[in-house]
Figure (spheres, rainbow, N blue to C red):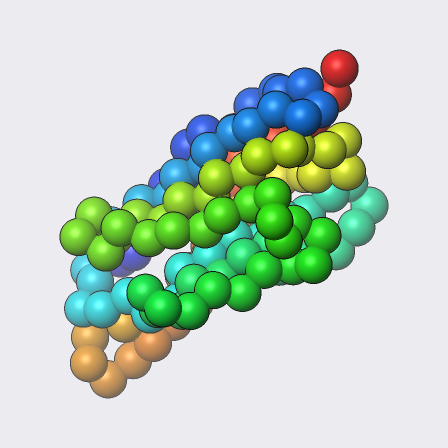
Amino acid sequence: QVQLVESGGGLVQPGGSLRLSCAASGSIFSINTMGWFRQAPGKERELVALKPSSSMTDYADSVKGRFTISRDNAKNTVYLQMDSLKPEDTAVYYCYARISPNPMREYSYWGQGTQVTVSS
């Protein structure tokens, strides 16, 4: 069994910063891609940032230059540093990972979601 546990959401004023963390635990052989998605009320879930490896990153255009994704492979953890936050960044943020619990399989896993609210 694999779990993704997120932390770090909350309420912040426009222009402020938050840092999200997501730790993977359980039966893990290897972790491939880790990343973040978000879903605002009435909208579909959308990609925020992905980090397939130590040298690759992928960001949504709406967050480029403001958000930074990083990974600590020793801790099986992915982070999302969010700066210059805007009200339109308000959403539930979900951690995502592609994990192999054994050498023969790879599955997608999701965290439970953490609320980020940007408001004055």
